[in-house]
Image (cartoon, rainbow, N blue to C red; front, side):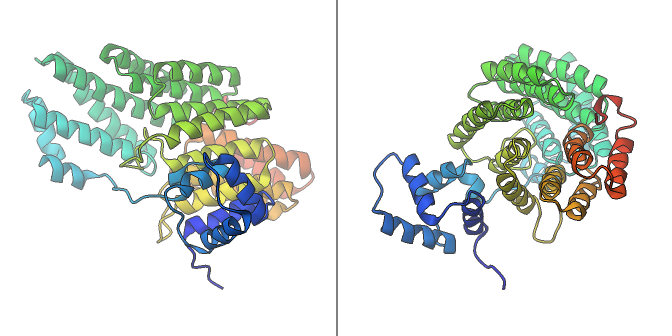
Length: 415
């Protein structure tokens, strides 16, 4: 039978089941998070049944339910958002790319031109999740050169700071894509340039993201103490910015790989509380915006590593649901790939080699990949294969496929 309940109602039920809770257990957890006394148990259990059947909770209960399941309100109850693109740049600024470039070449740097540049940078950052790496890298570098050239123009102090900030955002984007393609040296140079621009512009958020990139680089190369150091440096610089949430998540991932469950929970809870207190983002596609669904993706990684397979599997299915449009097109292919690795690990631990291989191979098929991150998570699946199925030819084939993927990237080869 078709389950026509809203996605949030299905998730509440799945989250409860993943913890082996009865509805009475869920109500008990809800009380622990409530700032005020709740109605009697029988009344709350009836209310919980109504929520799981699809009756939307009110604004008082939504954050409590999210806290019970270790997530944020808008991850469970998402709000509609806009999508960015060329059409929006044209509609808002009245300028197409050719007009923007023409204005730059004749030094027509006014408010309208800077607004169009800002929206173009936002568009590029919003195309990060799905645009092919090679295409995004070419376009990102072109726009970065154009904006950097403005530094030699006659600008007001305000314009100069705006140009520095635009250069910083584009440098962050280019550095991320360079790292996705395995060019570590170029990515690190670009990251340092972004940090320098942030310092010159006195822009804490860009500086925070530059430290977050350092944490990401360290994570994928196995330098887990380096992740924690970078996360702390970034949080000190940008403690009230959205990047602080992602810094907490990177720290949690590092602690998970170091085997410290208590620190994992502390870092995740810190990120969750920060994100819960922030306004819902206007543009979920923007790479340098931490959206609620992204937090589920972070937690998924951590739970997989600490062996909480039911929770990790439940979150992986949620990541796939949130990252796929109604027509089956993937909005977040890189997150989806790592969700499939998580499902593969869970299947391997459950003794289902066939399903583990299906998920593992599907994770390696996407056109839009972050090679370092994909190899990092896939080698964790490969470790399960070697430990549990070392005599199985199909498992050996998967490990070999993964090794081939990393041949050109020696710093990311599975151990």
